[in-house]
Length: 164
Image (cartoon, rainbow, N blue to C red; front, side):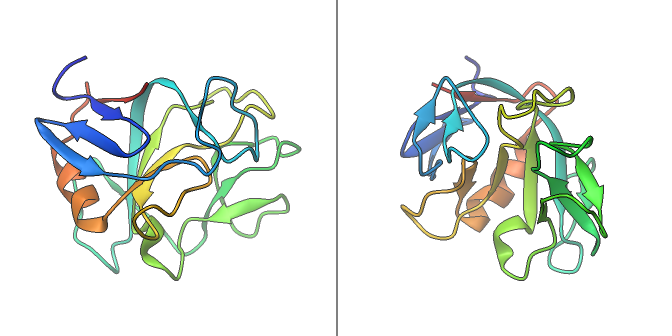
């Protein structure tokens, strides 16, 4: 592992010589991820995108893309675009990326089950803001918003998410 890797444990993350409290999925860590299990998948994951709310924050990195009012993420295994960003209106089950709460004001996308999704293996694993310390996610990795912004400004092309 390199100091540029985001190294996750069940209670914190190490990155660039610093340690940040984080939360993971309510299902804990798993090596056998399935859609809806609430678990965070172990492994080494590439970071493949960054999304942000331009109405709530400045662009966090030069490669970040804005979240628009119609942006969604498909988490329906019946959807041909399962585990992909889609636009409203969308006839399949999905998650809104433009939320009323600040949880997805900044989202870092991983390559979990992407770009060629295996249906049922679990949709996106995001890095995003937490709902509060110790409050688990649906499988993602989450941080305090200011920590997330600090991390987002420093990740590079070679940065990986390592979940032991």
